[in-house]
Image (cartoon, rainbow, N blue to C red; front, side, top):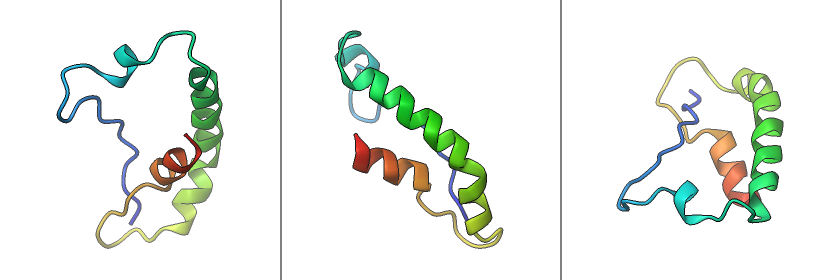
Length: 68
């Protein structure tokens, strides 16, 4: 079963990553491109996972971590 790709804002910090990273940082446009590409692949990811069982770590989250 495929888990949900939920972006957790703050776990142990009072500042979000959005507040920490400057607006003109080069990773911002790359992150937007990555999110768009992963959103387009969402249907293909969904087809690979069973409808039953325990939810996995979403493949989008794993790929995003590797790329960024």
